Length: 343
Image (cartoon, rainbow, N blue to C red):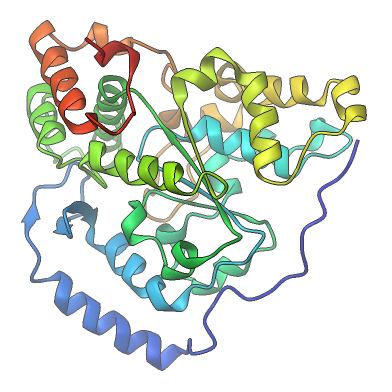
């Protein structure tokens, strides 16, 4: 079984990056962001602003704008992109594929949340820009395609792996997650009703939303540049996990050898990264999430059910029809469909 051999470390920070330049840039972007349209945020202590059609936490937007000219994608990089509440499983699989060793009993996933194993671009750039120089050629982000750093969009070599999920299930998962965070972080903040959250989601006011535009941006990129953008659905991954492990390995230039297949390495990856396995690890039941942006939020919040069709337990027929109709309208002529939205 082969081990991962990462390329020699090269800085992903621009040659022009410097502390004083960075401070001035942040000041300018802060001033610009203060003038943007705002709305009540689903997350306590955060604000939400609209920029070029999408809704962001203001600090994440500031980070994304600072990265535009200061981040240099490397040829071997793989960027794991997604809207919120769709990607924990994908992150675990790609991390395991990239870092596979002779013994999976030593995998960092046994002691860390998948999100902690892979640096998130907009989450950490402001507080520690040099984190992007990590040796691992995996970086994650929730940014829409159009706001990715210019070096990623213009690269002929680095790759993008995007996963999406059926909109109704995405909404229900997002609502549960934000409710639990509010309950954990503040007893003084009112919880958002399902009806209010539904209204926001359908208006495109969820985090990094509109969800449909987020998905479409990456879908169109995958159609135009299939060799650089791997687009797939959570539902398809659920149906053929083993097949997608092999596809992902090939796409990331980490193909599974014949020997690895004979030794059952793909099956080991699937087993290690399954919802049942990850959600039952002690670290994901009792430990706290290490990210500074969500202090005190337990890892268990990132694991709810992982089921397809759970929306049926929460949405009325009218609500489901509204999202299905919107999905059909948004995706018409794009070639992208979801089984439950097809009429």
